[in-house]
Length: 192
Image 1 (cartoon, rainbow, N blue to C red):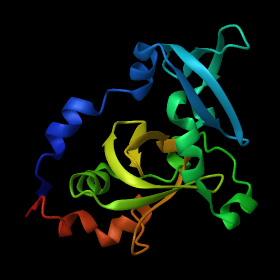
Image 2: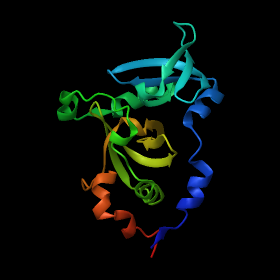
Image 3: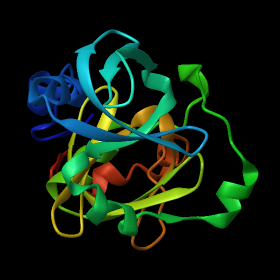
Image 4: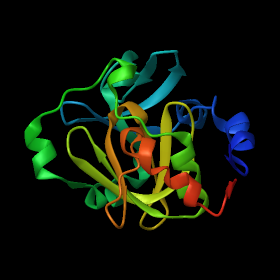
């Protein structure tokens, strides 16, 4: 049985990290896109197991459930990022709800993400409410995937918010599709 060169080392180093910890340490404001098409701007004061303690200019410290968050990025680049986010009208019209139960989510295997990241393939993430994020995967951990959009703008995508992941040719990288296709075995990183 083969393996992907470098994957285990990468997971050992990064899988337990969280971009929410980085957000907390930054002491800077972030823009959060939440389910229900809501957007809030806040600082992360504490990264709890299932929640974030946040504070905005308008409100006192409050608690935000991580499952409410779809994507987030530094507030200072929000004006550049928002125009790059497009929407799939069919998915938007379906009005999909957040998927709380992990077993029911649209999973992407680490074996699929790692070659896409290392080989710098342009990918298209579609979120549950139809948002489309086009970019390069620059990192991933257990709960988040970080993408670099046009202009090297970083956006963190919460794995639970993903509806689909495709490449330029339209090939899906969801676990359900890759069970039989096993595209990671076609990567130059694959060692048979």
